[in-house]
Image (cartoon, rainbow, N blue to C red; front, top):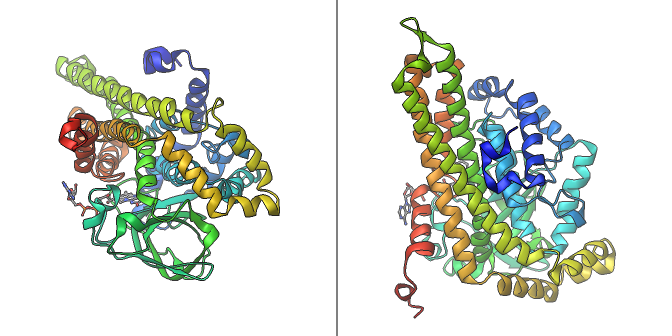
Length: 466
Ligand SMILES: Cc1cc2nc3c(=O)[nH]c(=O)nc-3n(C[C@H](O)[C@H](O)[C@H](O)COP(=O)(O)OP(=O)(O)OC[C@H]3O[C@@H](n4cnc5c(N)ncnc54)[C@H](O)[C@@H]3O)c2cc1C
């Protein structure tokens, strides 16, 4: 692979990114490309089908423990690594790719919380499962039937029409309500969810919990029949007096939205990469088509309008890639490294507790509120609001621009293919259906535009800070 030609200077000298790209490409060529069209068609008839055999193969490649810190036994991969991997997988099929994408979203809710107790109890399971060839899958659930956009933004949350609640009881919490359109919700072993403790004070009481698939009062049986990315289930999660023990609360009470915004700063660049992968898949198919198709005795690709269209698509694709690479690198350099990089005080602390929390005593310490207060204070000191905002702004910029690019490029592929673009076998219509969803999830593109204005454009005196 010519890394420089394809990815430019950001990965040219980075062996670890190159390694990820090669693994991703091998996996896509071996398992995704041959199955993508068939799975997409099958799921229209059977939306509960899940490509478990392909997912199992992901264990051999370390794709489930990929972003889990190495001291817990994971791959220790960064947001940049996740993003380039997702572009590669989604250039074959965004449905299959997004199973990994949604899993990483769930994992990042734990990794970035620095709640070491959850590292030990849940992330270690992912690592162990992977070694046995059994995927242990995560989901992340914030969206509710009447509140999608509003639960992804601190300013909008107080006005959200929430239908969930968490009630504090002895030794834990009781969850009630529904979350909808949750990627992996029906196949996940662990769901990272956010609930308000008081519905009329959602921002102050928004709290994260870990809900295992088998929890009493929890079910996830309805799967949506949706237009694209069909291989990745979007499920409804139902909580009916679902008891969650106190030790399954992630971080401190009331810190859920702050954590959601940090996670979105990490996760929107990988979603932008998913969109870029879709654009790339559509572009590559249009190029192949135009090289093989003859019209009036000439190859389609020899026509100047096709060459110009391809150049346009290729340029958009390259620009999209740079924008997600920049956002991902910003997150890794400014947030991940200052939180848990080798030179941070937290690095040896986390390592020590990672080992200690295996013991009863360690578990007691790490599940205590005192320990959580210490790690939360550390996260808040390291990621101040300005840094979190900048990261969210850059990732949102990449998310909406790559999602819009994916639609443009898919439309270009359909134009080049003419009526054959509408045929399933050429995949262009699948890429277009897959692309549309990237404009909706991880916050709609409208919300992402607003985040860019708020965090990158709006002057500080306008925000009342000066
Ligand atoms: C395939 C798929 C997978 C998904 N996976 C997950 C998942 O894993 N976890 C999860 O929690 N959620 C998931 N979602 C849900 C997704 O995040 C929401 O659909 C999204 O946030 C939009 O919320 P909504 O559908 O309620 O739309 P609404 O919030 O009702 O918005 C409807 C329209 O109004 C616009 N709008 C709303 N408020 C504003 C505003 N203040 N300013 C300007 N425009 C506004 C929106 O942009 C949108 O165009 C998924 C969705 C899809 C389609």
